[in-house]
Length: 256
Image (cartoon, rainbow, N blue to C red):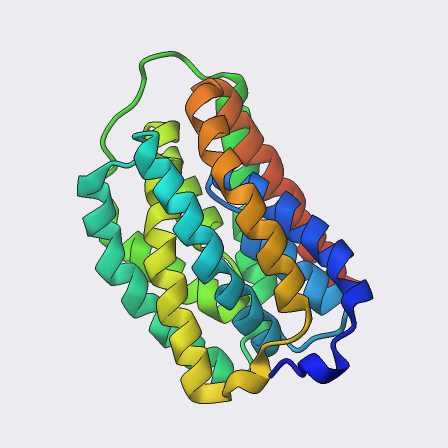
């Protein structure tokens, strides 16, 4: 738990910048806040995976609320898709948080990152060759929500990369897919945070949480504007680039 008596305010600025950048990418592309923030906490600060995931999800409880409201205002949400993702996602999140709090889940991380890197490359190629008016309704949704929620909690990030990328692979419309996945994520992160608090206690949340929170909330409204105004071809290409780079970095770091 944060001790405000010994709070080091000099640490806030870099985490505000990280939170702002991560949320800007997440709001616009439907992914990467957890991946970017979790990487900083674990790789730079040496925070344990469970503590890092708990901190990131507490911050996301606020950033996804702001982001989700912004996406609703800009009409980026497909409500039918929203309700089909919501319940499976929450169930998966609770299971993943419980597993990470009690079992070392890092063994599966390189395999998940390899899979996401492959999906990223596929989306990048598809974005570069993107034809107009080629959208279709995705068929695999509920299992995707369950898997995405579990991996998000157990891996410290993954809801956006897993769910958004797979829906786009199935041909879903990028703007509403990104907006919907971001909006569902609020309910997912609140549930995951509550599970971490129940299993780890408030000591799981560190000083870095404050900086990430400030930066993330400040950036949240801008992501929805970007998602609404940037063409689908560009969005798809950017999703592929971000997913490939973040996944490749995680693989290299694990192997080094």
